[in-house]
Length: 477
Ligand code: SAH
Image (cartoon, rainbow, N blue to C red; front, top):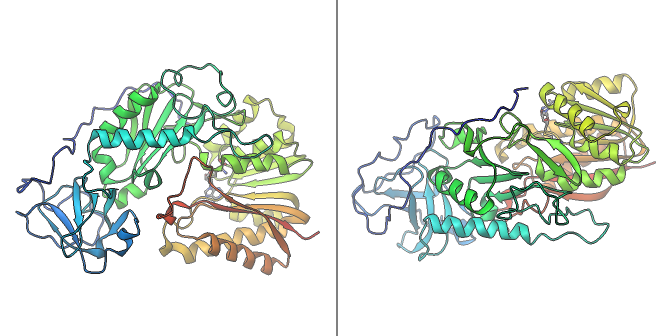
């Protein structure tokens, strides 16, 4: 594990911001579409239109349907031509074949998603004020996630959002502040900011930039976050695989302030160390917050098996909920070392916890061959299918681990099973799990349908946003 020394800000990166107004522009001396660096091989290129014309995207006849339903992506196959000579990241008007305005979108010649919509309103100007409005709206929406009625499992998010002048303070005033200090503040397309994710861990913000448009406005966005949230640090984790698909270089480093030695997130009163620089995603899986809380209520007196445990999230909740034993498996030794620290930092009894560094697919077979059994099994694997194209292979992976889990469950036992694959729908996931139960020879009931926490909203017109789905099942006694 790399130690977290305070890091110096990375070289300031201030590309010419996109305040250029393409409404009146006729000429552009930049690179032509398709000349962008690092284009993934075989990326379909929309037909370049008239380089001297007003920059803009014209869709093929009949290919405006998804836009009219307010879906925020334009695939390369829908593009008739790109006029002007725009750079990736530039804001362009999108029009139908008759020239009617449809939207303002961020262009990317190097992606199968040629453009992502910023705004549907022709009169809206995509400038710093636009980002200030969108970011404020996202923060305001988190502010409105009020504490659940007593006893509910919905996260108590009061105090989780950014509060100018309060965020940097370590005081625990306010109801939610002591219990939860982490939240997803910006959830990309679903918050009207395609490609932009911002997670809060205490007074550190982690920003993930995954689209050419968000990349273009990265410094403006960081300035606005600094102004509105006043964090001690904004750290950039723009190093996900999907950046490659956008033709963007990976980036990992401090954007504003200095990274504290020890970043921690408090969730329902449990403390988790977050490895912002080297951990997975932005360092922690905030999306499972409510589902972890549910685990706590189900674990009493049970022998629990937590597969893909990462830094011990579900395991710690199960232990606090009175589990008899918790066996946790993950392939990452770094994650397991943090998990053990988390256990100690929360004063939980290590005698009830066992950690195993192993491949879950193999470990489940070994446990089966050893004749082991459990009362409660949790499966929270990584994304097997980033897109629908990988669905078939992913389905085999999900079926395999769920089948093995059903075989390891005692009669009357519980299985909490998740998929975070955008390419696997909720319906398909349920069918895969049903197939696994059938092959394992068990009858099971669904007792909970689960999703990401409320700070990961799903835009109705963007069903791809509903990537996390889970089921809690009880097998027949
Ligand atoms: N449940 C966790 C998040 C799980 S993320 C939480 O609540 O925080 C998925 C985890 O699966 C990662 O920690 C990753 O290291 C692990 N992983 C990926 N492939 C694996 C494999 N084949 N076997 C074991 N662990 C694996």
